[in-house]
Image (tube, rainbow, N blue to C red; front, side, top):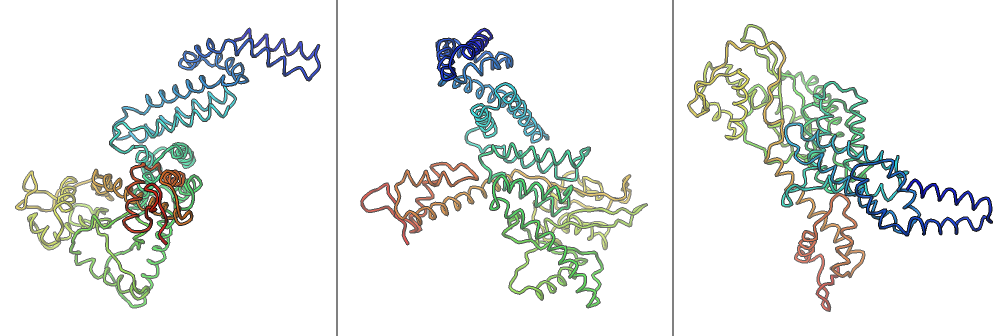
Length: 506
């Protein structure tokens, strides 16, 4: 290759010395035909080993030889794409453990950065090699270990962003966090199921906002703007509305305090509230459980409802107690502790104001909590040793009492529960919710297309729907089901003269 490159250069120089400039290209083409095109099979046979061993100098010589020859680069591009794909799969397959999401994103970014630099350095950022990099990364990121299960990349990327945006990201400066979030958009652009990412991201954002766990609101806003640039306003519309609700709620709390002051009402507790639009927040009503409010909070809730309904008519408030938290001061120990906990846990502890010991059955009957919530929250109080139980296993007759010998180095502490973490049921709910949204999205797309086209053949309709689906890659079977559903709903119908043609029913 070095000899051929040298010979081509010499021929070029000779042409410039002895020939008319109109002959330069003809001489060059003839030399390339004889010296390169005539040996294409041999050159191509060497590409695989060069790419596999990443021999940069050899590839740097190979590229300018193959570039001018028709179809010369095809084999090299394929080898590069296969190699990047293989290295990518090696980097991300077999990851497991608590930090799987961090390993996944950072390994993938490492692979992308390494081969992007190689293409810039060796192949002069040639578009066909950049395209190969994109295809290989897309293939790895959307790879499914099990074809029957959904791809986990959207969930892992959302978790990675969540880890960076939470207060717990220790030892990182704001600029470092910002750089990592900016880099994560590289992975996001390759994800096929962007709607799945959006569902997970919005759930995690909701948690951060409600539990005040965000590192910085500016970083949150910047990340949403990056997603908006990558996917458009429609994609981040609900995320923006969630932010608006938080700032509107702060204003509402100030007005509520002014309302109490004006009427000289003392609630006896510090009370603040978030009023969130049901349509924008992914909270759902699935986790709602019956619950009897502790007497200490009843007045606050009643006063807020009175204040809210005076200001807004026709709005319905649904209290999501399972997402509420409160601060309780423990004054019965050697030193006072201030503990942040869920409202359900707080209600359990407040029952011990007037009793030294209670059975599990009595607590559950008083609070009217369902078994799952009751067991989960009581277990967390026993685990952190604030309450002691008479039995190892929690049963109805277990006698519970306050631990009078409780000590802790810290005077302010937080009791976390499984509530803060994503449970397998919630993962399943998210995937189901995405499926339902997709069906509605596809049906809307079909109606839009048919309304403008009036009559369309089956294959043409499917192609149009595929081209309009930017947030995810829909399965053909799902599109067919949506077409059938719209025929049943009488939005479209099959034309009388052909079975694979549809017409819009106005």
